[in-house]
Image: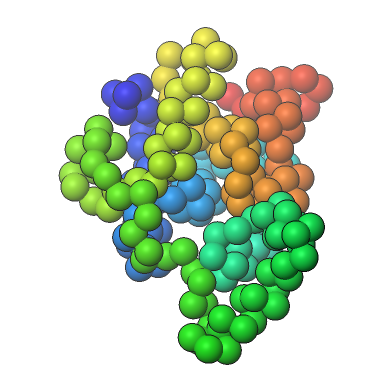
Amino acid sequence: MFERFTKDARAVVLGAVGHSERMGAETVEEQHMLLSLLDREGSRASFALASLGLDRHKESVLEALAEARRRGGLSRADADALSGLGLDLSEIVSRIEEAHGVGALESEGKGKGRGKGWWSGFLGGHRPFTRGAKDLLTESLRIALAQHDRHIGDEHLLLALTARPGVPAEVLADHGVTYASLRRVLYGGGEAKAS
C-alpha cells in the first residue's frame, strides 16, 4: 500500500511517528496524523487547510486535542453520551486528577492497539499503529480510489480523518474543516481548487 503514497503522504506518516515519540506514546494514533498534517507546508492538504482558515487557528486545534487527551481520548460526543447516562465526565476527570495527578487519564503511553503489520515494516519497526490509525490509512486508499487518483496524497489522509468519527474529526469540524468543505476545496465546487 505504501508504494502508492506520495512523498507528502509518507512525510505525514513519518511525522505522525515523530509526534508519537515526542509525546511519549507507545503507539501512533489518529491525532498524531492530524498533528503531522498541521505541520505540512506546500502540499495539497496544507493548501486545503489554509483555504479553510485552519492555519489561523492551529493553536486552538492543539488545545482541543490536548483537552481530549486529558479526557482519556474521549470526544465531546462520548462525554454527551455519558452525560445522558447521568455521568459528568468533567467531574470524573477532576476527581481522578485529584487522586492521581493532572493528565492521569491521558491516552498517551497506554500501549493500546499494539500489533505489527505492513505499516511497521514501512516505518522500520517504529511504534505500532492503533487500529484507528490503521483504519485511517485504509480509508485514505478508499478515498483516493473513489476519486480515481492513482496515488495516495496527504489530502487523502486529511479527507479520511474527517470521514471517520472521533476526536480529530470533531476538532476539525469545530474549526470549519469537514469532509464536504475539504472536497469542495480539493476537487472544486465553487471555491479555489488545490492543484
